[in-house]
Image (cartoon, rainbow, N blue to C red; front, side, top):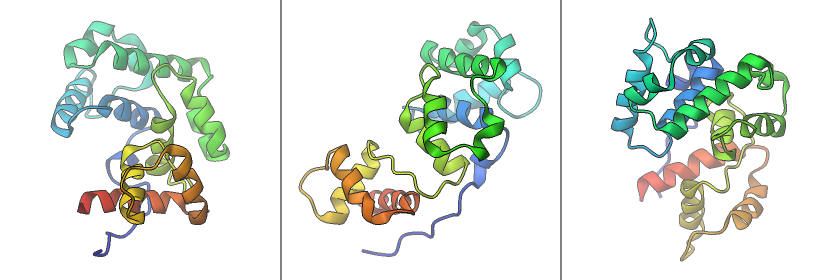
Length: 186
């Protein structure tokens, strides 16, 4: 195996810009889309309000659903972003407090938002907050990376990945990065 690129020391790059709300909304926008299509839709949503960034939570609440739909967001993604914005506004999602919260508390808080699951919360922990001990064991890339690393015939189940990942504590996010790179090289 060739060397994988160095762990980048998250957060950095595009996910380090803007607010936590905007980073999560960006993740929702990009879910299950090819990169080019996601970038186009994201760009159109950014154009719905003044400035170059994704609308703020309060701007999202003031925009009609039809504006998001016209920009190319699905009804489900529109609902997720609006629910996130509403929960930020009513205080049930406290993104300014995440620095003082445990990983489990953040996952619990974010998964209370309609359309945001454990994977999105885990990606927020790794790529936005730079948390070092997150293992998204249900992620297909992580499971495939473990398959390649261990020379398995099939991808291991989530439970098996979690068991395997115990050896990588307290740096499971770094292991996740390496597992993703293994998939890139295959």
